[in-house]
Length: 112
Image (tube, rainbow, N blue to C red):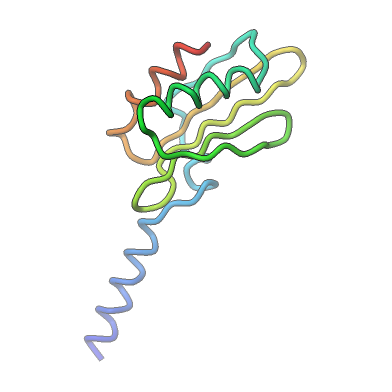
C-alpha cells in the first residue's frame, strides 16, 4: 500500500514538472516589447539569433503572428509570442526556468 502511494506521488511529481506551451505562455513575461518590424521579420530575426546560440526551438504560426517555443528536457522552457495588431507588432517572452532568461532575452531585445 505504501509503495503504491509513493509510486503515485513520484509519477505525479514527474508529470507536474513537465510544462506545456500554455503553462509557460500564461506565466508573467520576462521580456515585453514592441517594434515597427512585421511579426514575421521580428520572429525570423530572433529565430536566426537563437539558432546561432544552439537553442532548440520550433516556430509555429498563431493568430496575427508567430510563436517560438523553446524545448528542454522537462518540456517547454520558454515561449515567445509575437503578434501584429492595428499597425504595431508586440512581443512577449515567458520562461519556466530562470537560468535561460538572459541568453534568450538579449537577442529578443536586439531584434526590436
